Length: 180
Image (cartoon, rainbow, N blue to C red):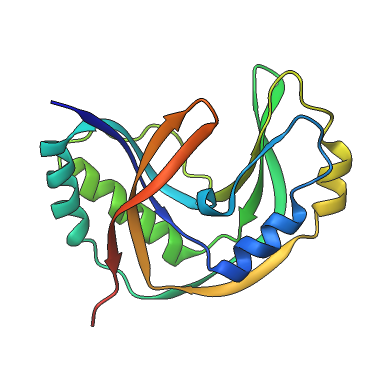
């Protein structure tokens, strides 16, 4: 049986994506994200088979949430072993976002997935970095005042991540919309 690499995420509106694309320059060797790959991960699932995928979809259909505003403010970076490996736009802290992420996590657990052990750090990844990437300090300083939003979140989606030699390609599998 074939498996799929999945994650649950929020997709920023098109005007947010365009503004983020405008900020994506100035770090040599950075692998900047395409507009289609910009998202806020609520839960990385990883490789699962189609039966488990069906269970995850069923569980996610039961996630209660009401529309809420979300905004981006500032930028940052992740490090591994003392070296920056990603730069990102920060999502403004929001109780509603935290509640949605927690509900998604609980739904994934009900579907039979192991608990996520990493702390939820809401962000939109803008670029991946490697040992050949240039310094990021000037970019962080220049883009530090980045602020977008808010936008109204009224849905979240389950995505597949197809890893290719040119980077991942994301495809939406299911959308879960707010219904009254």
